[in-house]
Length: 205
Image (tube, rainbow, N blue to C red; front, side, top):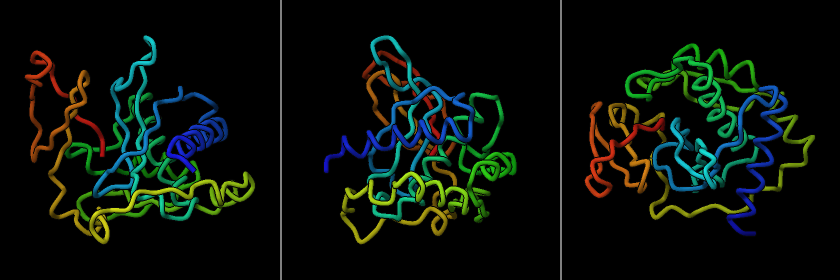
């Protein structure tokens, strides 16, 4: 099993979910597996990748989170696809620097096989697969498709729902040219000096 195999599976799962729940309205983004401390995944709303001139958004699944049951991983993929859908339709589904998930996010998510509950300061972000999504995973034979995950250096990364009070004001900014990333505790306008003052973009985490 290789990381590339995991990514290929997630791309295939994206296509199935896209067809079933979004009428194939979402163009496939770059799907990545990287460490995302404090969260199971994130959606990058700007064109973070360039594939021979084709601009792509990004959905990342946390490398350490792949140890969870496959229905929960698919629920995380769907969670990020909801952000993608809302972004494409101009639906404001988050606030407070994209950390607080509002009722519009909950509404869109619960139309598409997710159970959404609220947690302090991050709103309607806590995600579980509804029976419809669990049945889809079983019907597609996906239960044994994800066997590789990254071991965290520590016992575990903090659960975002448990550390919300400490992390609620944190925002992540990425340079769209070189990929340099930083975190800030408030909304800022910041340029990457390595890339000639290119403005860094905030991403949803």
